[in-house]
Image 1 (cartoon, one colour):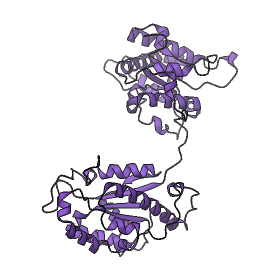
Image 2: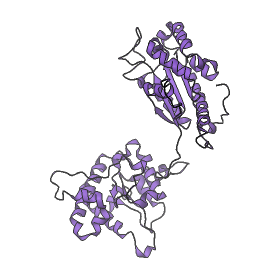
Image 3: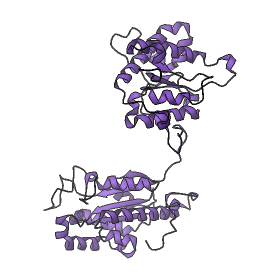
Image 4: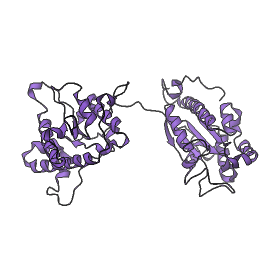
Length: 412
């Protein structure tokens, strides 16, 4: 280990105020005591155990330390999650380590969250609590830490035993994370890209939802005579196009996200109740979101399922698109193509009267055609959904469909 490779990086929000007053002195004291404990557990020099930025440090020194450390230690307090520098440091570590970065993050609850507040989405999955362990001398220390925060335990004379107990437990977590960390050193220049580092805690613009329902057999419930090669234990495993990796649900979700939507998978039973409710219902159907229903033509051989699909078709919701799949690279589908086409013609009558919708309802033979149609129909359903709700809500000034230069659909 060298001077450029600390065990942990302490990320904290500096307290505003004149430097001569040293308002962050408690943080510096905590850092030094934590470094000593971590150095003892990891058998490195105390000055190499951790890194934290001092007020007089060069503005970009943190990048070099963050590019080399194995463990990220954020000091949680309300100011931390509003400090853009802290948010960028979090992003830099996450991008460097990858999806498993949470294993290498050991948060410190410096002050407890104020009533009615929650952690930002980026930090929700990383535990802050210290569970009790067998043989704990201070059995109530984890509870006092969770209730009061480490700063209060550190400042109160009566809580010194609890403070040192929690300090030791945090050092142990850092040492374990250091030994098991997926982080590997990189150059400081590799911490960012041309877009710069984003603030992990900045509010993100909300994405409009796109509901997706997949109606297909499973291996435990196959149509009579149908082979199981394209199916799995659930409908999300259905893979009709043999030349395309992954399931059709995965493909649809990726396409939806590329279009700027937040996809939501809805089971067929729930979709049926929302799109084509019982005729005795007094309230008119109100759309929740634009919707795409993907149907395997083979399921229409079941009378009850076919009737439900037909009722959805007859409901003729403008914010719904039905995409029927008839994969040409499936030998069994090619053999039964005439019968399957007949089922689609019988049960998807209304959708056949439109151009893009008609193409989708007649049976989509190729994966690339499915991808193109999915994009066109998702965007047009979004615009029609906006039209359906404009009497109740103000029309958004922008959205996924408009960002792709789509005009109002007239014949989809």
